[in-house]
Image (tube, rainbow, N blue to C red; front, side):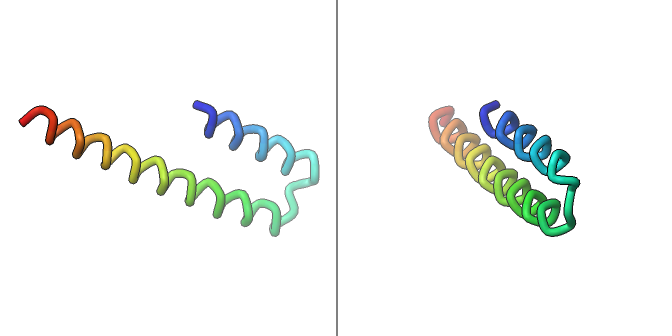
Amino acid sequence: MEVLGALSAVSAVSNLLGGSNQVEQGIEKMIQSFSQMLMQQAQQMQQQAEKAGK
């Protein structure tokens, strides 16, 4: 949830700055890397849960 809050704060700042293309591209890259991290964490947790279940 903290990540989502940070992302919304970043997007709000970019809107204040007028949403320059460089800022938007930077935010998109940040969001992509965040989502990749979250997906990896979710997969690891799922694998650990499956190991624990066996």
